[in-house]
Image (cartoon, helix red, strand yellow):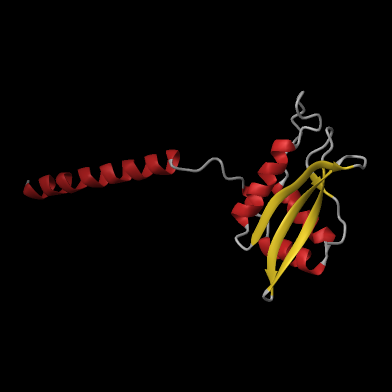
Length: 149
């Protein structure tokens, strides 16, 4: 009879611990992280910027900007002002060795209008600054022009 009591006494804390773990697993997940954004490679982006590979840069920017649809308003006719800031934040958060900032928004007189993101990174002890050309069309997601950098 004492054996059964001991088993019951030990199973209650185990049930409690398992219940807490289950609750943490269900409610503790960070739903704000996007698996696609996690797939972006800072190494590839860095290499593309250093070696002037526009296609490589744009493929990584496309991953980071995949969910940035235009939000046209009276104050933002292109709908990408906040999206550009979001993209810059993602670059800064994801890639520790790259510093990004909005250089200008809808400042390139082209079709569609273009914006520039200025990025700074280190290449073998030398500070390198590059500009990423971003399409800011009111009809399309934020995208990159595959120029040489």
